Length: 366
Image 1 (cartoon, rainbow, N blue to C red):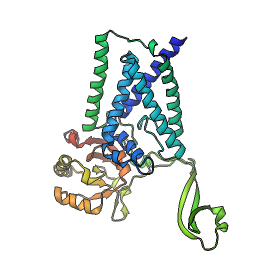
Image 2: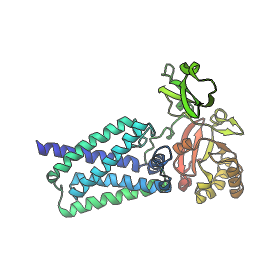
Image 3: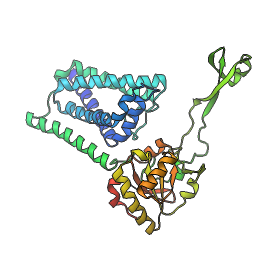
């Protein structure tokens, strides 16, 4: 019985780590955004790690895959199990902290393929911790599956394959797109709220300064606000989360006007997406001028979308001789639309026809 439980734990933990690692390895840039959220001031306030978020993300996801493979084949068992225990303890702390303090809504454990609430993520980690502890106490029962040469080949093969996959998706795009803006998606339909969908229940909280101390009052408490108290701020507290459409923060703003309804009716629309123009690839930006000329010759309307400032847009237009307009959209939304900076998207009346990394411009079918 002890051996059966141990082998089940080995299979369960190994497979789950491989699946979780591969999903994030498919989109390490997306996972790096999640790490940046953890490093931010409202959470752990460790901005020193933010510039290294992508490198850290790659290291973690490759390690997850490799540890999962090592466990399944029984390679370096003692070290593998202890590292797994250390990782799951750290993950459990992060997910508990997120859930208890309500600071990170989705841990990113399974990327965009499966969204878990903070408490669901914590529960998942506790289950894994339980099975890893079983492995710790019964590690002598985890035997190698193959002979030493085959073990070595499979172990290092998994490391090389994982590293190659990471390199590939960073220089192109995720192999499988799990996001709300994948090819075939109609943006207008993605923003629709079905009839009868549950609505959010929101409570307004008023903050007043009372004798030098900020205090919160609900709508029912307004009559209790002491005379002489000064208004500080108002915030909305979500009591019950209603239906949120897959696409909900998409805008195409210019000069204070949102042009998305007009632009999403275009039968041929080519969009250059760059959430941050100063951080965009110089080589990628250099390719856009020639592509814009070619696209216009093929009947496309060409625009850019960015979260950069008007001054940054003007500077970029002058530097690269861009003769097309840029429209504003929130940086988080643009990062969700595409991972490359810049990237190119083709739309037909709001439906995404094609998306490419700036390294793959030659693959565009105009």
